[in-house]
Length: 172
Picture 1 (cartoon, helix red, strand yellow):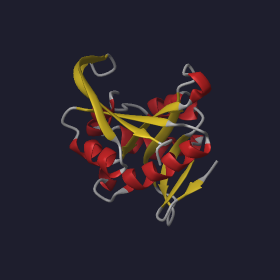
Picture 2 (picture 1 turned 45 degrees about the vertical axis):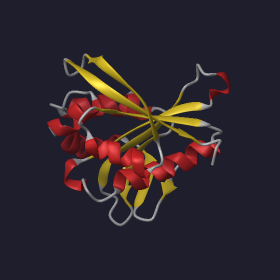
Picture 3 (picture 1 turned 90 degrees about the vertical axis):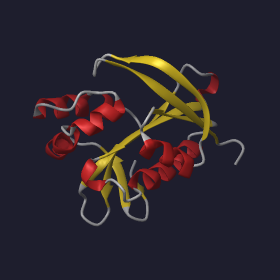
Picture 4 (picture 1 turned 135 degrees about the vertical axis):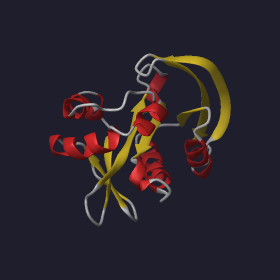
């Protein structure tokens, strides 16, 4: 599935994305904000493309005008919940593209996709101190629900405070 917004194209990942993915994901600021180690080798990008980025509703966020990769967004539906009505949203935007509103624009498109799939509640989590993600969650209409201290992120060897926000789609 391909989703078009005003400035972006959200499309399935392909193996051809590996070099651009590697360039963006090797920036330590990205991984540390998301809970994974910065990519060190092109193989890290290939591995991601064949595993978690190959999941349903995982999208490469690209510029409509040029096709340039700017980030990633995914909708993960909790298949353990009854009727699979709860999902979480995960995203990152490459540092060269920060401050352009791309995360909010892609987020609005993913929320619409969730509606189409019958999702009733979307969870968005971010680390304490990640003000950009806090602002994105607010722009998208998420409500702060809780914070969890000392959550272990073994890929980066840290324990972090995680904020959990929620958006009820059934109420819209």
